[in-house]
Length: 606
Image (cartoon, helix red, strand yellow):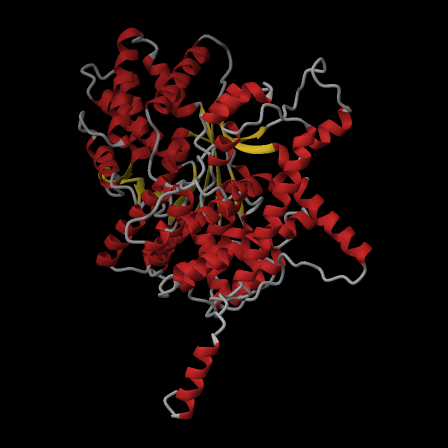
């Protein structure tokens, strides 16, 4: 394994930017658009201003640290991995300062000195004349989704920006000029100390690697200011480079639309790539329990997985997540109007980890065009719910279903009725004691479920109410019908027993957050009025009931009820999937009908 070369060398702003004479700076295609706004620009300028004042009135050459810049060299250029916002802003600031100095009527020695120092930090020098060539800028942005790349170039070349422009390059450049003018008017003697501090005493720590992978690793290790550069950004660049000019334009339009549509439903292109990886793995019959890194998977040199067509697959897959995350039907997608499908998808979304997403996504992508998709999708989702719920109740760990899910993923390909390796099964036991013990154990798992499964169970219970025609609210809280804190003056309870029963499923319901706050720890008689205002059918039904008290006995009774409902539901869904539903019986024929059938048979008519 080759050893990566990394160069770390502390430099001031002037030194770093001037080094662009030999190795120019490039913001790669896959980087995010320039996003600094007034807040960051004003903070940077004011911090440097205060620093310059401090230097002026104190002994010693203090430094102001501006942060790290991570890059790698490729084709004689410095590809910026981390620090693009800062580097871009520094170029804009230096260009603004240069413009102000160049316009000075009285070119003092200080002004001429700074002008000569800034020139090689912005533009290439002509080797013959030693003069700057303002068309050869030391910073270039190639961000594929940033329409302002040309604007940045024009600003750095001409020193002019439209005052009414809305792009960040123009607004920030004009803001730097505005701040400079304000300070030069209020503190004319300090402004040159500011320029000196900016050029010579503002320090950066450039970290240069010899390849992209090393630079990205360094960035992801150091970055603590926000989201690291996503793999999707890298993939965007790889696909973009393969296309001709016409293909590039179409691809960027698709990418922007996908990015916008995904953000609207709280999804990301990165996640879509991840779901798609499991689909591709399933098609390759890969059911290994070890999940490869997404970048390693797509950029495998022995495979051709990162093609322009992948963006179309992601767009198709997003239709599923619009329904799940957006919680609404999607135009043109008939299945998305099926409330039974939407309810079970909403119930699955409360599973404790993301393993449920992969088979759902794969089944959708593989079978969505079948004529009976609604029917097979609903049966599949219900069976999946049973599997996930029962396995986690039995073994409440994150990896409880991992191996089985990966096997299921592969089975879904070319098979709309895949075999499940786990799920609800009633154990057939001969011994009566063993039967009773097993029933008690199963009941206990449902009555007192692991806390991670409560929401998943409550959703299914709520959706069993016939009057619950819509999805539950997007945000709701778990309501304890008998309050978690009770007044011992009214109830004399065994505290240990009470606390245990309060967490039973029979004492819990989904309730809108606002109503949950107002219900608080009131007793049942007071809560009922709040329950009546709920739009959740199961809790409104309780509010409209004739009950005037709710105690531990009610919890026991309700435990038994909800346990039987859930067990019956799980069994029904499994039987439905396995084709074991009770088929309608053919009515028995009357003697007259039997005689008629016999006669028709004898005559050869049937």
